[in-house]
Amino acid sequence: MGGASSEREEKVSLELTEEILQSMEVGMTFRDYNGRISSMDFHRTSSYLVTASDDESIRLYDVASATCLKTINSKKYGVDLVCFTSHPTTVIYSSKNGWDESLRLLSLNDNKYLRYFRGHHDRVVSLSLCARKECFISGSLDRTVLLWDQRAEKCQGLLRVQGKPATAYDEQGVVFSIAFGGYIRMFDARKYEKGPFDIFSVGEDISDANIVKFSNDGRLMLLTTSDGHIHVLDSFRGTLLSTYNVKPISSNLTLEASFSPEGMFVISGSGDGSVYAWSVRSGKEVASWMSTEMEPPVIKWAPGSLMFATGSSELSFWIPDLSKLGAYVDRK
Image 1: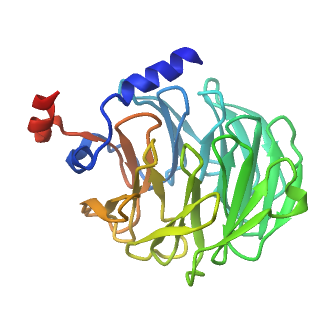
Image 2 (image 1 turned 180 degrees about the horizontal axis):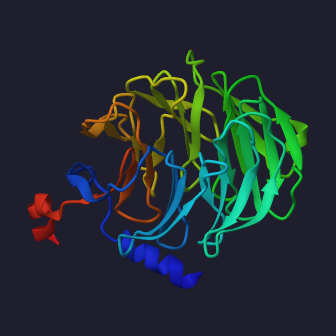
C-alpha cells in the first residue's frame, strides 16, 4: 500500500485551485459507444476505469495510458450500474433487461461469472461497495436495500424504504447512508439492524433521491435529487451547508455529482447535459461547461488525480489545460 499512497501524493502535488478547475477541458474522448453510458467507476488504487453502457457493453480502460483494455458484452442481461471490487479486474454489475434483477460478480480477465446475487424484484438503482471489507449494498425500486457479502449468494440483511433509495458507504466502511423522500438515514454498518443512528433532512426537497456520496475524508456528504438539487451536508452534524441548483431531470435518468479528492469542490451534471463545478467553502459556482447533449452525463472524479471523467454517448477525460495557466506555471 505504501507505494500506492506515495504515488497518489505525487499525482496531487499540483493542488487543485479554482484557477486550475476553470482551465479544465476534454483531453481525450472515446466515441465508439452505440448507446449512452449509464454508469462508471474508478478503481481506488489502480489507474483503471470501468464503464457500463446501454449498448450492453462493459469496458475497462487504463486511464494512465488512455487506452481501452477490454470490452465485454452482456447481451443476455444488459448492464446498468457497475462498480469495481477491491480487485482491479473484478466488477459487480446490475442488469437492464426487465426480467432478471440479479447482481453479478464478473471477472473481466476471463469473462467469467464468479457469483450471482439474487434478491431484488425490480430494477436496482443504487450500488455501493465497502472499501474495507467484502461487503456491498444495493437499493432497488422494489423499495428494499439489501446488504451483501461478496462471498455469499444470499443477502445478509434487508432494510425497507418508502421511496427510490440512494445508498453509499463512507470511505472507512464504518457507516452507510440511505437517502429517500427528503431525508438521509445514517447507519452503523455493524449494527444496522438497530435502525438509523441519525436522520438528516435536506429541507423542502422531497423529489427522488438520485446519488448520495461521502467525501474522501468522510466529513461531507452530497445528495442529488431529480428536481435538480445538489445538497452538501456536514456528515457528522447533518447541517445543510449549501444547495446547488441545475436543470431538473426526468425520472428514468440520474443526476450524478462527485467531490474532488480533497473535498474542496463538487462537480455535477445537469438536466440540460451541462457540467458545473462549485466551491464547497464559498458555495459559489466556479466553472461550467455547456454541452450539445440534452441529458445529464455520469460524472466521477479520478481518485487522487487532477482529472475527472464524464460519460454520455461518449466517454471524456477532463484535464487542466496548463497553457491557460501561464502565470501559474511561471510562478512555480
